[in-house]
Length: 109
Image (cartoon, rainbow, N blue to C red; front, top):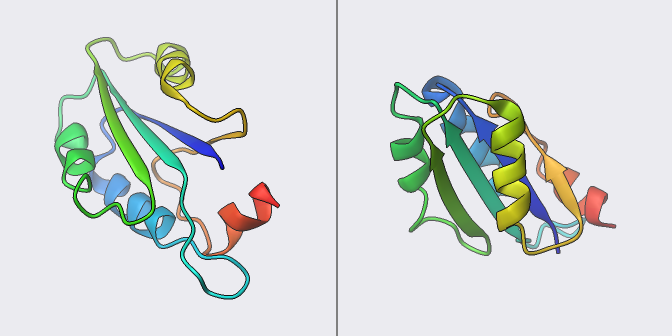
C-alpha cells in the first residue's frame, strides 16, 4: 500500500482533476486499486480544502484525509502529510499533476 501526499496551496482550479485521476487508479488488469491520499491545504484563500472534502464520500478504495494548515508552507505541509501517513511507501504529488491510470500501481510494484 502507498500513502500519497498532496501539499496544496490555492490549488482549487487543479485539485479536482488531480484527485479524479488518482482515485481512478487501476492495476495492469484494469482492477481499481487504493491506498491513502492526504491533501494538505496550506495557507489557502480559495476553495482547495472544500474541494478536497467533496471527495470524502467518493473515495472508492482510497482512504482520503484532508488537513488544513493556516500557514502557507510547502515544507510544513509535507511534514504534516508525513505525520498522517500510514504507509512507509510514499509519493508526493503536486495538485496540478494528473497521473495516468496505472502509474500508482507501477510505483507500488
